[in-house]
Length: 390
Ligand code: KG4
Ligand code: ZN
Image (cartoon, rainbow, N blue to C red; front, side):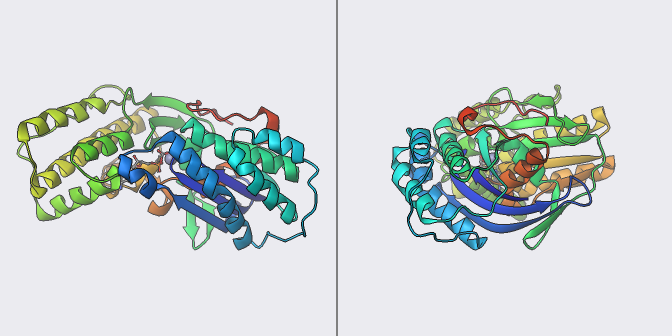
């Protein structure tokens, strides 16, 4: 199956084309035929965070060029000589909220043959709704024009499935899985612990009651005066402090560490804000020390809850996914503690930890195998959808 996938849930615009075959398990094979990703980090940096309407405008500007690039890398873009489009009226209606996209998308469609694809997958949520709608509406328009099945993908299932495959160059196979599994999904908007007792079956064990782990990294980084996006900047400083053997003379709180499987990170941010008020202007060294202690506090909580979940359900492996899984410290600590418990750690390469369309294509492929397509008219972007088992 050849599948086109689109991701626009936050501040990355992604399009990829995958060729996949086989069921989940040892006969699964997948190759990336085309992949185009554009980050909006520089656009949002001056504001210190992601602005939904600015994100939407950037997705509108970049999506068609990225689509064109991914399809041409996959050698699926064939010029046709401009001809009228049968579905023009329907496409205009689908893009009524993205009027800026109407002319470029119609131009693109009428100048190219329908590419040889079998399905289109798109992130429908969770994420920033104005941003999600851009991808959703373009996917609806393409599915209508090319008469292809449209597969809605839950962004966090994309992160989860990305941790299950092993890459060799641009091709991947699936790791052997033994259930039950625990998944720790940690991104800018989510912190969730799930149990999975069979393929694509999910059960929520715990979630954050306030800030997500990535959000905690970003907000605390901002308090420390670090540039957006704060997570990677903070963890870089934390690493430097660790290498120099520097640490704060006191510990920051590890909220709810001994308490159930839910998380809470807002208290950590408040504790740091109070400390910083007492400190006045921070030296570079002091910023490094706070960065290290922040990272260790967040990672301690993530690791201890994950370990407890592994014990409670008797998991044979932990799947680590979401942007925060790019963090080297959380990877190293989890690898360490899981060694004693006998559970394996599955995590994707750091470049696929943060948002991308490849993971959406992978999840979309497996949803397509289960015939989870939807009529283009029925698809909606949803800011906070539940992750449903397939
Ligand atoms: O999954 P993702 O790319 O976007 C969402 O779905 O939210 O996750 C982005 C989050 C941001 O909060 C970012 O600061 C965090 O992942 N992040 C990191 C690191 N790289 C990305 N946090 C800590 N350490 C990192 N190295
Ligand atoms: Zn994400």
